[in-house]
Amino acid sequence: TDAVLEIRGLNVDYGLGDQAVHAIRDVNLTLHRGEVLGLAGESGSGKSTLAYGMTRLLPPPGVVAGGEVLYHGEDGPVDVLRMTHAQLRAFRWAQTAIVFQGAMNSLNPVHRISTQLTDVIKAHRPGMTAAARLDRARELLHLVGIAADRLDSYPHQLSGGMRQRVMIGMALALEPKVVIMDEPTTALDVVVQRQILRQLVELRERLGFSVVFITHDLSLLVEFSDRIAIMYGGRIVEEANSAELYRDPRHPYSAGLLNSFPALRGPKRELTGIPGSPPDLRAMPPGCSFHPRCPHAMERCGAEVPVLGVPLDHVGPDRTAACWLHPVHDNGL
Ligand code: ATP
Ligand code: MG
Image (tube, rainbow, N blue to C red):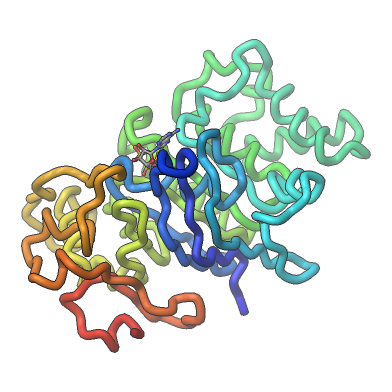
């Protein structure tokens, strides 16, 4: 297999027992080596929860209620959800690095960029000399297109986009196999988001890691990612390669999302957006959770939850859509 991360049957709740809100439901998703996988969905669809859940960084009251996240490292597959703390420490940064939503504000304001970069290196490569660490920090800044003289800057002396790049540089410090980037929806403008994503894609080609890029702006993903997974109400409702998703979205929600953002390339679409609002996790509609907003809803949609087939085993360009509009064999059911 060329999978680097395989999420199987992942469920994440906020709270316990009767109070539990099911924020991630039965998510199956595979990240292949060297690919850029885009994760899109409206605010509240569960994108960040999925990223935190799969890396065991869920803040309380978040709990993983089931599933596994297989990381295929050099020693064979390991379930991230069952790693010991020592294994986790090595896994984070060194194997999988996350750049959080709002990460550019998580740089320490009282330390120079050089200190923050070398501290990350020091923590994981204690054998390296101070001079070698500083060289590496310089190299990392160069990688993300920041001049070496910025090493002496404090975070407030950098623009938001530059701070975001520093965070990417930091994420790449230990040459991880996977970089997860949870893009802030408001903090950076679209132009800066595009620059950052483009840079990440270039680095991916040079350094050969895989990327999970999270955004609500599907047009960015269409341009830069290899595959796209669309989330709605805590589930993945469609998964396809980017070009196919753009050309022929199978889930009406994906079609709605595509029509919510101006296309950067290709034929112009009329922007219509999606009427209504995302579902309340505490009161999910029966059947397909999108059916109250869906222009194509049928009787069955309000009664039965459409589930994705068995994408776990899929290889190649298969695509899946959890929608009753499509014949069952399409979903692999
Ligand atoms: P955005 O695009 O705004 O970042 P998102 O897709 O990342 O949204 P999440 O932040 O993962 O969405 O939230 C998913 C759901 O989980 C939302 O309904 C949210 O209200 C709920 N949620 C998130 N954090 C908590 C929490 N600490 N306690 C309870 N519910 C939470
Ligand atoms: Mg989020």
